Image (cartoon, rainbow, N blue to C red; front, side):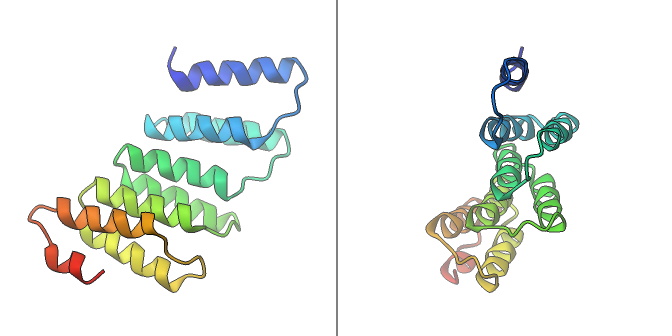
Length: 152
């Protein structure tokens, strides 16, 4: 079985043993499921978290956004980011950086820079990871966009 499936089996064993559950193992699984684009399974995992009365926080949603970024799936990364906001969860620097990275992976430089600009306007602040992802998008764009990178 795949990594996320084996990890879910561990979750089931933990539940059966009466281990108090935290979000951390679920977040790892969510990132792996998103990376494999198994969004129905991710939704089931979120439901399982809710069944344990876990609050879906920024780390949970960022795990999903980051997994989408690793898969180069920018539209799904944005969709999970929006679900986070709709759920009343305040995005942090890592959530924004993951969306920027997703657009960089997809060579969508203008969207990466637009999200960097949105991040700058937000209250979370901008870190080196976000800038690096935006620069990466500029350098990997076809055709290259060095002028856009210089403006960052």
